[in-house]
Image 1: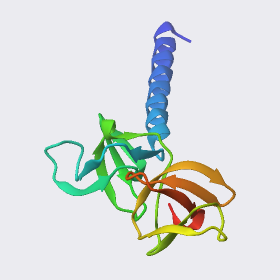
Image 2: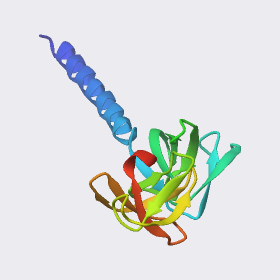
Image 3: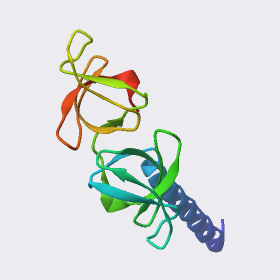
Length: 153
């Protein structure tokens, strides 16, 4: 093998490894579940403040990242809607959002416990604990209780 061919093969392999590394880094963030940590966040149509605000979400709103561009995350939510959010507005905190029209939040992890409040579809909660099929949750207003896992995303 000539020296030029050897240098070419080394360069080609280094290029391929670099591309694989970058691809894997992007995939590591893709699918990651994050939570909104500010009281209210703007969801935009693209990765920047010059893009339109298409809706707003509130504290503990869970998202699944599908792409990262600079300091912006493209995500999908519990309804399959997609948007962009600025990186500093989210963190890796366990949260859930209700997916049913009426959800009972109970005083303990089971149907024998009293209902402390009910909530509608689209209400986000921080996860405090899990026990069996039940999730101990806290709303941003401080209300706490237990919800069954099939009622949330």
